[in-house]
Image (cartoon, rainbow, N blue to C red; front, side, top):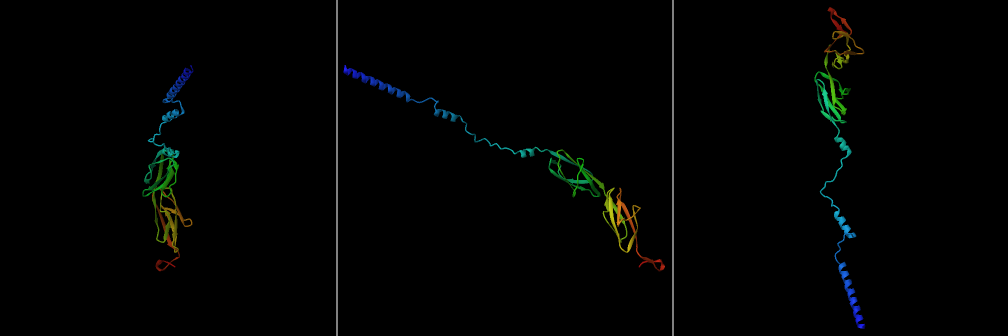
Length: 229
C-alpha cells in the first residue's frame, strides 16, 4: 500500500509539471495585441505625414509695396499756342512733375494754370505735385512788340525795348552834359521825363519814341553861325 501511494504522488507531480509547461508554451507565443504603449507609439508615429521638402516658402509682401503698386496714373495735357514743352505725358498721384516751357520767337509766356488754378513759371519751368485726377495745363502767350527809339548819339536809353500789349515799361533816358532834351514824343504824342525816366504803356503794335536835343550855352557868331562857348 505504501508503495502504491508514493507512485500516485509521483504521477500527480508529473501531471502538474506537464501542465505548467503547457502554460509557458502558450504564453510564449507572439503578442498580436496593439493595445500596449509600444504598439500605440508605432501606430501614431506612422500616421504623422513627413514634411514636403518640395513646397515653396511663403513670402509676405510689405503693405507699403502693395499700396505703391495700386497708386493710379493720370494723364497730363498741355494747351497753348506759340510754345514748345518738354515733360512727361502722365504721372502717378503724388509724384513731383516738372514741365519745361519755351515761347516761340516774338512771343512771351504771360501765365499758366493747372486745372484752372494759377501756377508759377520759374526759369521756364512749371513744377507741381500730380493730383489724383488728370492734369490740364493751359499756357498763355502774347506777341512781343518793339520800341523803336529815334535820337542823336548824345542820348542813351536804357530799359526793355520790347513788350506785350498792356505792359508798362520804364526807360531811363540820359543825355550828354553839353546837351539838353527839348522834345520827346511817343507815337507822335508829347511825353516827358520824371526824374530821368520815361514811362510808356505798350499797345497792340510797335512803338516809336522820338527824342530831340540841343546844345547848352550857344551864341550866334558872324554870318548867323551858331557856336558853343
